[in-house]
Amino acid sequence: QAAPLPEGGRRVRQVAFAGKVRRHVATGGGRMFRKLLGKDDDSLSMAEEAAITRLVAARRNLVAEGGRVNTKSEVGFNACSQFLDCVDAAAKALRLDPVPRSYRLAFTINYRALFPDEARNYRVDVLEASVEQYAVIWVNGDTFEFTAEAMRRAEALQRAWAELGALIDRHVPPPTLPQTARPTRSEWRNALVALDCSWASFEHKYIAELIAIEEQARRLVVQAIEHERAMQMLEAKHHDDAVLHSMPEYRQELGKLVGCIAHLNSVANFRRKGRDDLKVEVLFDAMATLRRCEVAQRSGECGVAALYEAAQTLARDVVESFLAIREYLREVERCLERIDPHLCNNLGLVARLVDWEESWEIGTRYVQHEALLACICDLVAEVRSVQRLVPALANMCEDCDVELFMVLPRIIWLRFLSQPMRYAGLVKMILPHRFKSLEEAADSSVVVCDSDLKELLDRFTVAKALLCETWACGADSKELRRPSSYRPLCDKEDAPVQAALDFLMRRAIIGPTCCQPKGETSRVLTGEAQAVVDDFVRELERWSMELQRHCPEDWNQCSAILVQCLSGPPTPKRAPGPFRV
Image: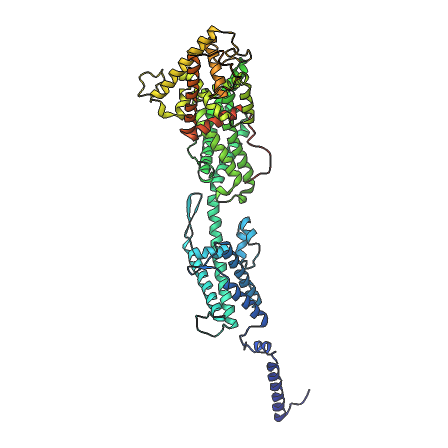
């Protein structure tokens, strides 16, 4: 053990140590020593200064409007995103640990994809929410409120954001502001820590409340899934459709499911009307129609298949569109987290709702009204028969030619003029102003129409009478002779009347001006008859235009139904392919 130094030797060694300290500080290596002594000089290192310089430069690029950062435009959004990246980089350069964000573990899978770890991960949309501070948001037509605590945390984040901005202005003050002392290192650290704490606090509350709102918004789909699942369980117990549809429990679940679909349609179907008034009775009537069609077809009567073709097509469309939605609900149950809470953004759901509304709207108007359904069935069967009389019509239907949509209203008018009572309901639906109501009509067994339509009926009667007379005078005429393959639907009509109707039908398809070989018509119709028929055909064209233009929506629906029924079997609504939410 060394002997203690004398007092004089101790002072010499202290002086030498103090000299070394002064030299160490003078050479720039004193920061670590001063930290050791708890006396930090609070200046930035070169790396920290570079990070702060980038932060200041990024703030200059922010787009401001009305004293707020603009994040709505693409330029503003990108500038804000770059600034937030620089904030994160400055915090890392100053060796600041991020505030714990373990709350993100409770986020749903969609938000965990946006916030995969506990890194700061500053996002522009979170900042934007704190700026706007909307206490109420609208989702699927319903209002949802954020709590007062969420608004308080948003205000706290904005205060921290403003304090950081003031610190940046002190670092490089604008020319319009007086020069001030530059912020110290501790001030930068305090500002960035305060911002991170406020950011994490608001992010936690805001995202948690968003998740709760989204769960409520998806509740519409979840309720439909629950009713569909209840139907599946009943169907698994009772395999007989007749037994199922007679069970009150099953019919109740079916009605609830249709109600959920109608509600979904009203909030998600932006491509059509979004109707919520389509009831389960449409489905019941469609099923009953299909059963009647099956019974009639099994009877084996000649011509029954053609007569029921349209009814079967429209009723099957109603049922298939409903089954397609049921299949969608079964598929989407496996991936509920993929459903966008704004239901109109789910393309697969919207596509099925569009088809459902269109099919059920037609079902409500036609399938549920036997008179209109009978008109459509008769028209489809008539067009099938006329295709054999005029082969050009078959080509129009096959190619869905534009001319077909000029011919269809003429055919409808000729069917109405030849059988007014049978077709009055269909024509009145499209041209209601041409008919009197049942209260105004003295005799419900007679079609009561306005004077203009009555004049058209009279012209048709005169033209038909002249054609019948011509046929009776020359039954062997090529122009009025019916091909043997064409069998009219109305077998009770005599040959002259049917020949006259055939002739007018050909003229309606060919058009107002006769396109037959020159001189062909003149050998059959001469003088007064020729003039009367030509005048009637021209007048028929005027009424055809009115049928199309008075209410385009009703006419388009009617013509679309006819084309659909004439185009053969419908395409499956549940076609295989990748599932789309």
